[in-house]
Length: 309
Ligand SMILES: [Zn+2]
Ligand SMILES: [Zn+2]
Image (cartoon, rainbow, N blue to C red; front, top):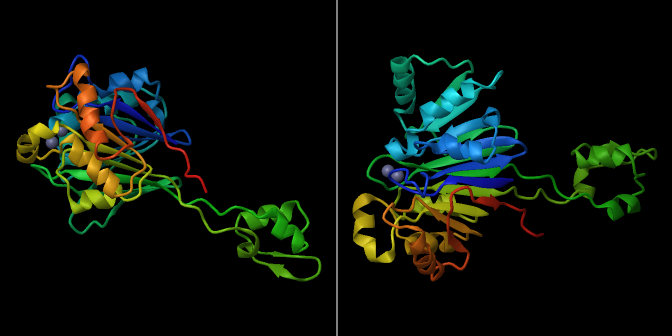
C-alpha cells in the first residue's frame, strides 16, 4: 500500500503546485481523495491507470476539490471495459456531476454509484474486499468531509512450532488452519485455528482531511493512523486568517496528528502565497509540534509499511 500525492496546493492550481488530491494504491486498486482542476495531469504523470480507480471521495463542493471530477470521469470513459465506480461526497455531489453531464452531453459507459453523506448515514461510507472508508464532517465554511481509509485486519501469524507439537503434519492441513478452518487429525482429534494462529493483526490506516479547523472529528479520523494527510494551509502568524477561512496553520495540523498518535503527517492544501522558498519555514513550524511532520510535494509517493510487530 502506498499513497501518491497528486497535488499539494489549495484554492487554485498554480504553475508550481497542483491542487491537493491523494491516491491510495492497494493491491493494484486505486482510491482517490478529491479531484481539483487539472488533477488528471499528475494522475497521468504518476502512471496510475484510471481503470482501476474504484472510489472517488470528494471532501466538499468547493471548486478546488471537485472541478476536476468531470474530466476524470470523461478520461475513464476512454478506457475500454472500465468497471463500476463509486463516488462519495457531501449532498449535492450527484447533482453536480449529473448537471455537468447533461450540459456537456458526455457519455459514460460504466456504472457510477453515488453515496452522499447524511446525518443518519453512519460512519462507514464504503466497503469492499480490501478496505473500508469512514467519513466525518469537519469544521469548514461549508459541509466538508474528512475520510479515513482502513485496510481490513490481516489474519494472525501461523505458528509452525505449535502445529508440530500438536502432531499436525505440514501440508494441506496447515493451509486450512491458516485460512481459519478447523481440521481433524487421523487420531480423531479436532484442532481449531485459534490453537495455531495468532490474533488478527490490524491493517494500515490513512486519514485524508483538508479544509478544516482542528476538531474532535478530525482527531477521531487521525487516531493512530499510519499516515495523515492534513490541511496545513498557513504559517502560524496567519492564525486569524486560518480561523476565518476554516483552515489550519501548519503547527495546528502537526499538533493534532501528534496528539492523535499518527505515525506520520503530510501537510497539504498549501496556500498559493507560499512558494518553494517558504517550504522550509512551514516545515520548521510543523516540526516543532511533531517530529514526523512534513510539507507535502506534488507527485510525492508515501509508502505505508506495516508496523513492526
Ligand atoms: Zn480547498
Ligand atoms: Zn473549502
